[in-house]
Amino acid sequence: MSTDPSGAAELGAIYRDQFGFVWRILRRLGVPPEALEDAAQDVFVVVHRRWDAYDPDVPIRSWLFGITRRVAADTRKRLQRVASRSEGRADTERLGDPADVAARAEASDFVARFLATLDEDKRIVFVLADVEGLTAPEIGAALGVNLNTIYARLRAARLRFQTARAEWTGSAAEVG
Picture: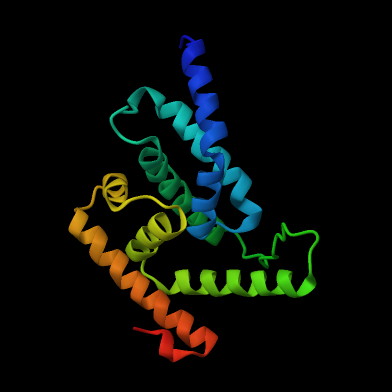
């Protein structure tokens, strides 16, 4: 296999630019904190291995999402086969007002519990749209799903989120 320096530079740039995106998607797709680093590296190993198959007409995030989704599923399955360990929280917040840290942790736990209630199709669309900021056409391209289906899944997930949030905050008046 010949080494293409320009390809290596491009892969390095993609790694630097997209690592955070891959990390967040893995986390939101249920990869536990202790496995995130390995899973993220696995994504970029696949990217490197499949780079020749990348179609430049496809947005890089859409292509990366497809790989990340498969790696997340494989990681979850592998971890389920291994004896379950307690999932300690990897708290990245070192300093700050304890009340703020507690509120962020509580909100984060709420979102994680909410995402766990969604079927995978709605969860993925919700995360990509409302957390990662991808457009519906980008999501449709990444998932290979009809645009109307993306909009329907997103609407259903948003309504469920709105209801869950109102129940969590105790203000059912927020549900519209």
